[in-house]
Amino acid sequence: MSRIYRFLDERLNLGPLIRGIADHEVPAHADPLKNLSAMIYCFGGIVFFILLLQALTGVFLMLYYVPSPEDAYASVNYIQNETSFGSFVRGIHQVGASAAVVMVSLHMARVVFTGSYKKPRELNWIVGIFLLLVVAGFCFTGYLLPWDQKAYWATTVGVNMVATIPLVGDFLADALRGGKEVGSLTLVRFFVIHVMFLPAFLVFFLAAHFFMVRRQGLSRPL
Amino acid sequence: MANRDAPSAEAEKSPSLFYPHHLFLEALTAVAVLLILTLLSFVWDVPLEEMADPGDVTYVPRPEWYFLFYFQLLKYFEGPLVVIGTCVLPALVFTLLILLPFLDKGETTRIRKRPVAAAVCLASLFSVVALTVISVVEDELHGYRMVLPPITGEQIAEGEDIFGRFCQICHSMDGKGGFIAPDLTQIGSRANRAYIERVVLNPQIVSQTTIMSLIPLSDPERHAVSAYLSRKKETGQKK
Image (cartoon, rainbow over all chains, first blue to last red; front, side, top):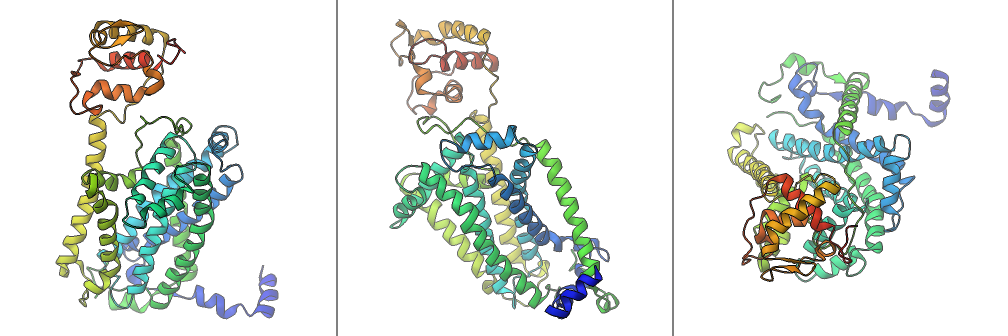
């Protein structure tokens, strides 16, 4: 182990990089061992862990999932009932989505409660709002993918709501649906948004979020 | 509540390091979260309903629980007002959220010294919880969350009997019965079972001015009627 590390360190000079991450000081007011109520500071970290789980289970679901109206339902059914651990992976993905929403809300409540959005952390708060929108987008697009009754009609209602926006509503709704009705184009669009567009946004905003937390440190009570 | 007690000077002097101390705690928390999610995924059945049927216009969709509050809010804005619910309010809320750090500018971060911020946040939290509860309760009352027992032959026979005694006074079926109300011979092709249940429970969902009266049926009786009617498809035969 240490030989491998030395090999890499000699060539890549990893020392400063690792020390920068590892020797970062965690303030005592956010250390649960010194003060149990500091657990409120770990909601954000839990969100991150759940998002990792979602990515992992999502990749495995994608091994079987087929985004077409003829096959989507059957493929989800197959994942659920035929593949080994399929129902488990899908279960984690489903419960994880709810858990992510709960933890995002708690994280946000904590930030409001401790006034952590105040100067100098305004920008990180705004990035957080964008992350909230990204998570909501994941939830909305993921709902259609099983292509069951609930999925189809909830999406129809959701897109109809978009259509009520003045001026641009109709255009946006048509763009989301790929036409006038929820159909095969809609399914592919929602699938691609769910597995390509939103993850890209998520990675970008998360990187910004973490970068700013590290630069600015945790807020302390004033 | 970490902020209430200012951390002692001594504790501040000896902050712990991210690695290994904090990372270990985070790994522990992650394992705990994974365990809880695993348990929940076994307790909480992942629903997969019938395959989507774009022709079935009687299906009443409900969003996932975390969007219920918004769904309920939209019910209060009908017709031309709907734009307030779908556009004005969300835009307002997100603008306020983004501007929050610039509106709540005071030095102090303690929640007790920020009564306005605290009040606004508690009020929003309360509204979200209240709207969610109202949505669930309304759905319970109107039968949108019914779990229907699987259809059996006995049920269909019982349903036919009850239909003959109560409904056929007004509705006709296969050429027999009253003509005050619509013919129900092929009702199974036009409406799904859940919809039939809801109409029997609350006839006014068909129309505000319906003359159909509330039929006092027990739950099993109503399930029998809906089982019978949902099987009356185009051929008029039991499927």
